[in-house]
Each structure stands twice: as structure tokens, then as C-alpha cells.
Length: 271
Ligand SMILES: Cc1cc2nc3c(=O)[nH]c(=O)nc-3n(C[C@H](O)[C@H](O)[C@H](O)COP(=O)(O)O)c2cc1C
Image (cartoon, rainbow, N blue to C red; front, side, top):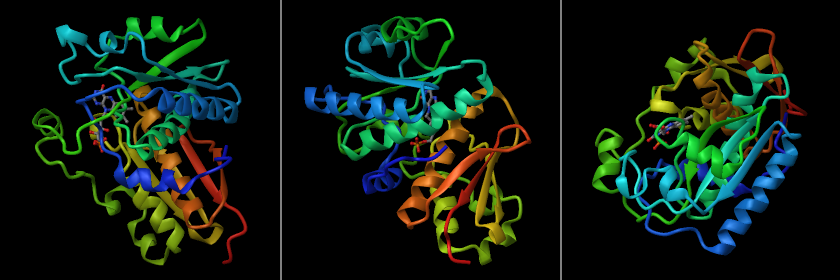
């Protein structure tokens, strides 16, 4: 698995992205068309294992609408759905939804739109109906899409625990062997930092990383394996590869033998 084509805006998006929960307007028709085009490209890259789509009708109901039953979100007029198509390999699809879905989220971020990965706080049956989720498909997450005020609102800051700043574990806590970092090549350090600032459900940061400097490889894995964390892992894989590509390092992801461990092997890097 690899990213086929990467614009530098995805790299910038990793730094810029924060979860947004208050929306002021729908994306324009042009923005929705551009996002739908990019989603189709990602779906093709994923070889049919995921289906990312964009919907405008019914978005308000999906996020609580006027009754505000999912109180966290307001003003949502469009959303994206991240759907896994298991085809017999259910273990991987959550990871793939995170991997391809985060590329979509970063693209929307780069277009100036607000987003938020949402696995829990939305009307699932309504979203499934709107997205036409079929048998053999799983709707893993959705994200609101739309214009957002420049600054975070009070309620957004409350949800984030008052701090508008990113609160994340130090990198040393996420590495199997923190001492390996000192000798890591620049692209690896940048890739790990990008993974560290990635979003995860409840900001749990369940991913861990192992370096194999001698073979220019990074393994990302889950410390524990609940199904819900697979999307988080996929997001981290996307961040690692985007930072590597930005540093001029191409590579490929393969699934390891241990469960929920994926290894990024850089290609053609001078040792
Ligand atoms: C897979 C996943 C599921 C999430 N589900 C929800 C959710 O149901 N409701 C919500 O308000 N935020 C949800 N979030 C957003 C996280 O709380 C947020 O990403 C995390 O706290 C880090 O903050 P940041 O995205 O602003 O950097 C989810 C994030 C991820 C990655």
C-alpha cells in the first residue's frame, strides 16, 4: 500500500488540522465537486476496499440537527462518510479507512474547510441511509465538512479540554526504543513527529512505533487491539508516509505478521 500522488498541501494540512465542531456554512458546490473527485481517486487507489463519499442532504440530521441531540456539533450542512468494504478481510478495513480517509481529511483541511473525524457522536442509522451503506459494508466514521470561524469557539475549546493547543504524548512515550531516535535519519524523525500530532478517538494516541534504522523502516502498531483503534492506526500510517514523501522518501506499507502492525519500508534511500 502506498500513496500514488501527493501534493504538498497534504503535508501542510497535518500541521493545520484540528477537529472543528461549529460550522457556519456548507462547502461551495465547487468545493463539494473537488472533494468528490478526490474521494473517487482515493477509492480507486484503495482498490475497492474503502468507499469515501460526500453528501450534503440530511447532514443536519446526522449531527443532531435542531434538536441538537449530539450536542457537540452545530451548523453542519455537509459530511463525508468513510465506509469499509470488508470483502472477507475485516481486520484491515478499519486501518484502510483511516489511511485513505485521513488523506481526504487533509485535502479538505488544505482547502480551508473544517473537519472532524467522528466515530461515535452521530446518528448512525441516518448516516447509513444517506450514504446507501450496503451489506458487506461498514460505516466506520463520518466527518462534517464546511466553513468554520477562524478561531475556535468556547464550546470547541471546552470539548478540547480548554486548551486550543494540541495535547499529545511526548514522542519518547510512543517509541519501543526511545534511544533509537537520536540516530534516526531526518526523514524518520519528521515522519514520527507527524504521526504523533495525528488525531485519534478520544485523543487516546494508541499507536506505538519501532524503528529499524539499518533497513530504513518504521513499524507502527497498536499497543492494544480493540477494533475501534484501527482507524487511528490507519491515520498514523498516512501521516508517516506523507512526511516521508515530503522529505523526498518514497516507500511502501506492508502488514506484518503480528496483528495490527504495519511496516513502512523506504526505497532507494542512501544509507
Ligand atoms: C477515529 C476517530 C474517532 C473520533 N470520534 C469522535 C466523536 O465521535 N466525537 C467527537 O466529537 N470527536 C471525535 N474524534 C475527534 C477526537 O476527539 C480528536 O481528533 C482528538 O481529541 C484530537 O484533537 P484534534 O483532532 O483537534 O487534534 C474522533 C477522532 C478519531 C481519529
